Image (tube, rainbow, N blue to C red; front, side, top):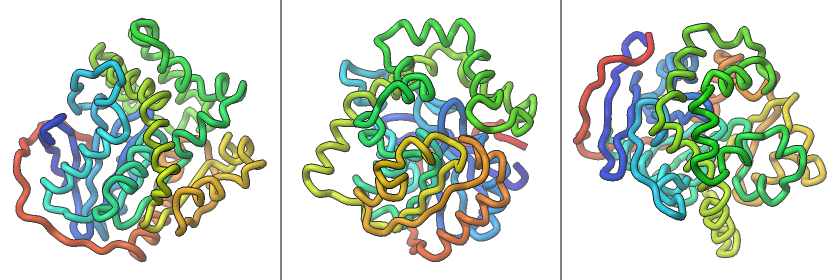
Length: 317
């Protein structure tokens, strides 16, 4: 990506790989599965015309580190991942920032907004619902349609061995059109990069730990927030695939907006043409929507100069 800077930032718990570009108020972009920060390659430059854009690999994904886990999978909870991102932004000099997260990144993003309300000015969640809302409504459709939720959450080493044996089968399924986005959305080099990121045993284990956390400790954190009446205080933008499961599976609950309004009083949003990977299908439209939303809500302040960063040599071109 022209004009971008690639950094590795030590948060004290993990080393997070980020790509930074642009200037102005800060916007943090978080990817989903089975992607990396590469998914923002066509959105980040557009947002960088108005904002400082930071694309981050979640811990365990892409070029970020893979900290050891524990019996509760807490190091791969959304709470731990959200701490990473707050620390990253502080080290880059941003006390406050906005976040857009797709899929798994959307869940890290909303956890950051819940746990660190004084840091997050605006939140955009793309084709995602809260962890507990999904599990509490789980049925045969989830087991078959969202197979990573159940398969990757199985005890080790079963899912690790399955993925390690054929990482291209995972990306091949996701990017073949089976998840709603046409195969033509993803070029050969992009698919190869995503497959390579899913080929390292340490990262495979970390990703499975993240799914195990979602099946356990993340649900506990969400339930505790609901019991305590904790809400997301910043404005929330919800976008979801018009043809995907979120648009049909949850109609009896009022749809995605109704479910998010259980956690946040200020929620707007709409369905988007395209499949699950609609940010990569429609980068210009999604960038424009995000830019408009963030421009209305951002209140940027800066912290002291960044520390504990070291350059890495290869980002995307």
